Image: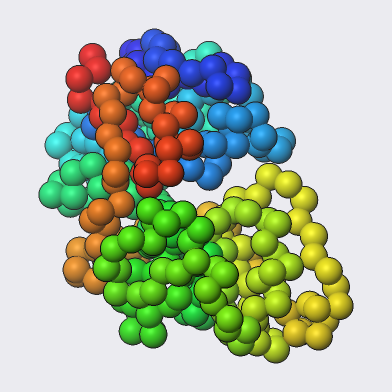
Length: 309
């Protein structure tokens, strides 16, 4: 069995290629993917060559951990059946290519216990489940300030409101991402004089902001690093000492986060609407990747696999 997949053969070297799939076992599913997302965090680091050493990393590489599609084969031990709509957080099922993440393919093989059922009515938005679960996993105390109004920042803000907490303030330097009625304030950082935030969540991935954020917390306040940072992080100790600053790193979601996020979506408490701004056929992957990372108008790029054989 084989499939068309996105192959990253090196930094800025990308295209579609045919790769062989490993045979499915009794606990596996074969899923035909309709849509997959391009991550502006981790995948950008692979694209630029800035990703630090990571377990399972190598080239050629099938990227992507945001995929949604339909089960076309289900092993007898899976509890699934053909036609079930599922979110797939990547797969390692390729013969001759590294499957680090591995969700950007027309067809893939995955263990059934890795997928999550989703409502078919979500369509392409079903591919956003992992990103929403990442935001949910990061949240402990509700953020009062969110840095960055990209997709992750918007999900953090929506989850804050869904929790019943006060709407957060969001910093965003791009004027285009500040326009709109969001139910919370999105402002230029230079227009914010507040210095008593109890909880600041950085969704920008910009580690150089750390000293600035420390100056903005209240004594004993917390800064949550919710992005992915390729460079070493550092900060001046005296201001952090005076503030008794707390730093927390939010890692990736857990399977329980996926289930909880799906429940919020199904209950109508969390919307994924308006986050997908660009969609391209998977055959245009060479154009889609740079646009996903370099176009400030692009919040989330989705690859449409339905026309790929």
